[in-house]
Image 1 (tube, rainbow over the protein chains, first blue to last red):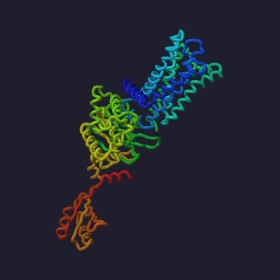
Image 2: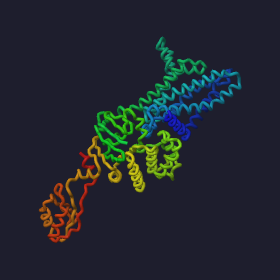
Image 3: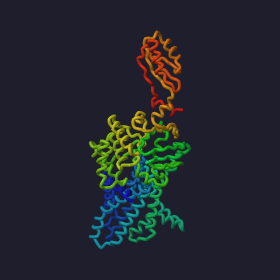
Image 4: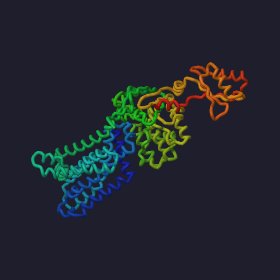
Length: 241
Length: 310
């Protein structure tokens, strides 16, 4: 456990040392702020003190923001050979993947902390449903965890950052839209199955303040699957090359 | 700590990069790993450091097997990988601290260890720079420093002196010898004099198989069972006289004039015999002047070339 934290700490420092963190947080806040407060059907037109518009926009900004964080995590280590350095230290493959995961999640938490002024501002406008807001933030965290593990998996199978970025967007698109769209064109149990696979179903219900154990299980298992696959890809070097 | 390698095999597809090799290294020994490119040196090192699992066979390090106790082994090994990969966007001091934390070095001792490594590896001038801003030689020193920071029992170095200047090479060799007194060191290199200068034992591998194992003296003796001398003889009437009388000696098997030097000959003795005394006596008897008699040793290069070319 200690090794995971050491690695996560180092990765987080690298984010902040290399400006990646500042640029990405600025873009994330800029985009979600612009669409929440200034553009389109923004928060003032709803006639209700709610952060719902922000949560719907964060759904898409996180979708672009997270692959940009995860794309270099494993691919760059593979390309530069530092993976060998890391894995010959007392670290297992799983600990490496977990350390990277934790670093990305920490950065997301920091980015989300900067959106707390939105919450404070809206709570001045009118009576706000505090439970729904907490649940919405919880939903964003769960979704981020799932997207980070998908991103890490994409990053593990290539040593090219751009390929990793595009690949995690492609996988992400399936969970964010395509399963949802498909589930509408199928009826019966297959339609229900696709509906369950779609990330938007679960995210919407959590961000509305309805937390069901099914949603939590969905996010956690998607996250675990991504991390498990990333670790498997790393361990593949033991079998063939 | 002892290293025991038993029947180690690693296949890449159908190619056997390491083919059923076995050897032991004992504590306080410095083993030099030699071999042409693609012989399997780096693969063996990757298996020893638990980066990669072998297809078959076992490595036992101080009682721990690479199959079951990889974590324990990794804690006791310091490793400098081939091409010395480093995090170029990290500051050197942060990097050393990171590695020390990963190895679980006691928190109170970390600063002391870092200071020691910086002194030992001569990094003091550049210590506040980012690794990416360092020259190749300094990066190599950082690689060595990170390998030794947790005071490992075993040090595995894949080409440790590439990119260093001659002074630094001498220092690093001295350092390796110093460490090798108490610890086990395995190093691979292409520089043959380096092996002779630093290693107690040499292991030459070719096509994944061990082709020679022993001290440099043993290897020399194996490669050269007969004595070879270069002699210069003056005051003889002509070349042919020397050639006929020297060939008549019992211990001499062959004499050859050296083409670009006058009066100089290469003389081979018969197996396990020496011709030095006979030659001297012959010259005294004939009133020739012997101005040079040099025993020619087989160079490690020759042994290496002979063993690794088919």
